[in-house]
Image 1 (cartoon, rainbow over the protein chains, first blue to last red):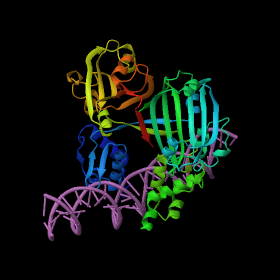
Image 2: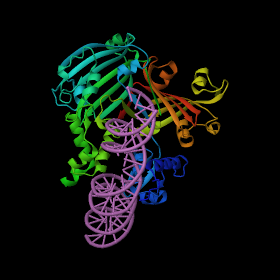
Image 3: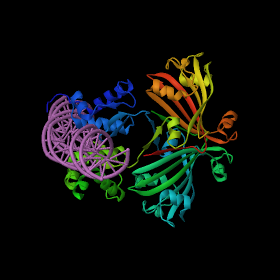
Image 4: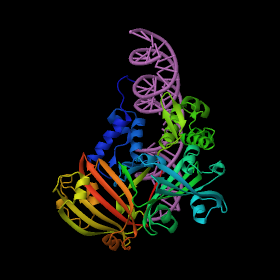
Length: 233
Length: 233
DNA sequence: AACGCTATTATGTATATACAAAAAATGTCA
DNA sequence: TGACATTTTTTGTATATACATAATAGCGTT
């Protein structure tokens, strides 16, 4: 109730991180309960709770009711990777972006796609294939399936001048997403489009998005091996 | 009962997601203020605030004081990628982890390594090469350079039974890191070790860490192309 | 010992209240 | 008009309180 500076959950969190780093709270060790910490820091339990929940989300501690909170034994560090629009990615490198539509059609979803999107057999999806170029050189090959049920209006889009991602991002936000990255050997068609030899290594990013539980789109983005995805922690 | 469920921040969040999905709250559109929403949902403002903050963290809405909350128009989203210990990664798949040390020596840093770590010419580093196996099959080839100035005690480690990463995470935490992911063609030695043919695609992860500005380690982790790095948003 | 019930306890979350902070909107003055 | 200070609005966060929920520990019965 006092007008003095309150203990911020951020400061509390920082101090907790320090203790974990300094091994005052050793890996695997049980740390004091929220009430005790609240007393120690001179803060409300809710404030300590917030700090601890954030640490738990960051993977530094593990919490269980009744059992208490303990420092994670093997802190899984996390790297954050920005997923920009291809166009911005290319333009930010000072290159000229251009775009080519390869194909666009409503098709019955192939079994692999249907299964990954958990759709009913026979569902028809919009299938778009296109190429993104940086300074006229192939930069990314995009093979995308869009669920019209979750993205009404797709069928009216021709995707002649702008890619489906730009349209989706502007019109159909997603609430959940799954990303996968891998290396693969270029297929004949991909190779021809990207200007590499069949069998050459390519960098593949796959993205699957949902909005409120309904699958929106599954996309496979293929880059030549020279592509590097970089992230700083 | 349904009364409590209705007031939960989860339920409120779900309803908000639904409205965004249904475009009742269109992309770029301003949504009602917290107080109005609290009244509408029959909840406290703190509860609505929590729901909105979670939506903001997920990138679905953008919030600014005084300006209010609006549905995100062009989300430059971020994927978080977990960087676990190889051993845990393998064991969590239910496979048996094993480890083989290939070489360990103090060496003058090659020019490429020296430059990336911004070290003085002639600096000697610990060079460790090893292999991580899942159920006796090659899973990851590790080629690592460690700066003894930032990781005192390396020279006393033989790395016969456990890899350098386990020792590093337990003894020399880092404050900054740079990650890079790419596809590459397997070199002759890598290919032999990983059981693939030279030139076959491999997935390469590079990691560079610093502690308080001083470079600690540079590591190149090579996986067969079957490896997928997955992340959920 | 094995099982199941209950009490205990730490975390999880909602609420009302109060105040802080940021930023847009507005007013003031040269 | 334009720069700068002030007001107002909206989100951000701390607090005390209350109750919910999950999981353990303990007890008693068979």
